[in-house]
Image (cartoon, rainbow, N blue to C red; front, side, top):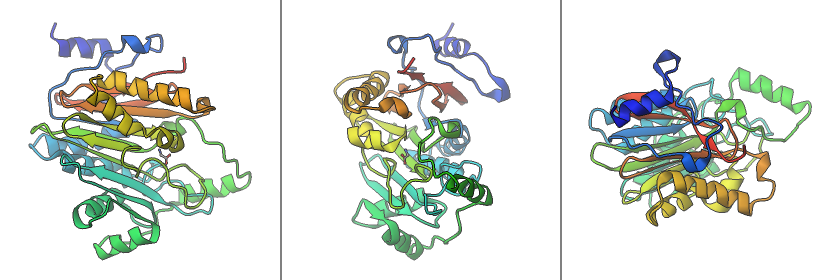
Amino acid sequence: MSSRRRFIKQSGLASLGLIAAGQSSQATPKKHKSKKVTRPLAIATWKNGVQANVAAWDVLSKGGRALDAVEQGVKVVEADPNDMTVGYGGRPDRDGIVTLDACIMDETGNAGSVCALENIKHPISVARRVMEKTPHVMLAGDGALQFAKEEGFAEENLLTDKAKKEFQEWRKTSDYKPLINIENHDTIGMLALDAQGNISGACTTSGLAYKMHGRVGDSPIIGAGMYCDNEVGGAVATGMGELVMKTLGSYLVVELMNQGMSPQKAVEEAIARIVKKIPGYQDFQIGYLAINKAGEVGAYSLHKGFNYALYANGENQLIDSSYYLK
Ligand code: GLY
């Protein structure tokens, strides 16, 4: 049996043409094997990564650039009002304001990012313009909005009726405890390896629901929420950003791969670093994805419940990540 067929068989077919390739909850991380795939490939966090991958694959399958693939991919989720942790429809901060964070990185090592951006539906595209049209890497708040408007992005209200209603409910108690696996989707982080062998990444979020106004998470921080090195690979993070920022998680994963680790070993080590360094880590979810130049994939999280979408060899699969806390 070919390795590809064996992989699909081991994964178990699920409905709707997707394959829930579960890591058994019994499996120890040591037994997890990275899966070799043929380029191109796209990989994205959470189940909404499946729809993002479709848009990314549209670019990649035509020989397009990984950078375009990740931008087009995450834009689908940014525009989805039903995803309440990314873009339009995202939950607001504790003042009722939707603020967005995003970053993007290309195969040359160029990077762009925006944080605390209001009223713009596609922060990832603003981040790309920062990368391509300014001498800077990151623009924040009013400055990011001013730049976006100068670039022709339209201002619009991002707070949907549904998010507003939930926020008004939340205000009655103002309970600030983050929920693990919020609605089973959080930040979208996406990596792509194109047919030319180039790697790019993108990460975009409305951040922690009901955060303090002005709070910025890991997602727009190059090296925290996402990092790519075209000679090595790329990594993205999802979950409680403060833990990722304190360990500079995505850079750590890529550097570990640079030192010779497989993507799977590298993401496991990045989670181990959080466990070692951050007291109270058990109260939060963190998930990492990584790819290397060979198209090997790694995925690991603190808690059960993290999943990701992998589009490779013409198949888009939803896969359960292995995890640390059994
Ligand atoms: N990972 C998203 C955030 O913490 O804002």
